[in-house]
Image 1: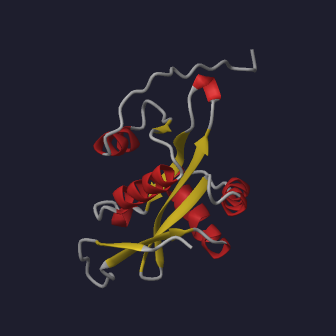
Image 2: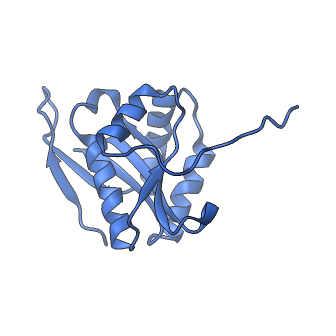
Image 3: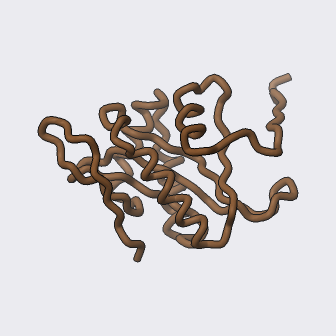
Length: 162
């Protein structure tokens, strides 16, 4: 079982001081859906359930982590080790990260990112990648602050309704 890690967060009035990073479980699902809908404007309960089930079925390759501040879920991150897509050796991919807006200045996102990167390293991969919308300035700033930069691939797409 993964060891829980804690970091002190800036003290807010009435808030516990410890952030604990742990694997997500089924009782977290409702809160994950709520937090995602709060940050994206789109509730996707089936999507999150599918990712949670995958992380439970493949705990050495798929990681669904949550941050807790006391009994409150303050954030989550989802990552997976993918191998050989586009000729790339195995690497870690971050598919999603969200932090409750009231906790964004407490290093919650950084702790989540650091923890998923530790899981990737432990599994033997040496790179982490993600893909974001180019107009998502908040998430772009976050990933850049974590040391991420443009990689060797260019995403292409085609509208199938044409």
